[in-house]
Image (cartoon, rainbow, N blue to C red):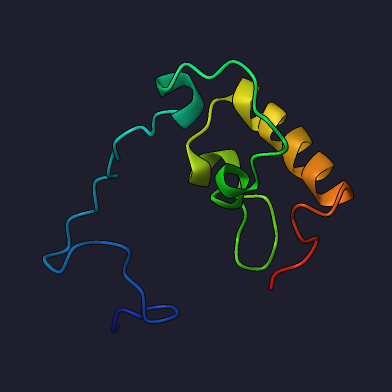
Length: 91
């Protein structure tokens, strides 16, 4: 019987070996590296780096922030949106 491929994928290298998972470099928290204790909600320029073009807050795995600074960043972005320093939606 002929071997049937499902969906056209073989999930491996071209020579038939299974692929090895890649380990990427771990991102460093920008705020920890600069030793910033408090994230200022009035600094709209710095907060814009952590917002997508659609206006959404970037997740921790994309921004590279630690959990503590990601929580502070989320609160700062929401405060800045509330007083109209940042838009709620993308521009």
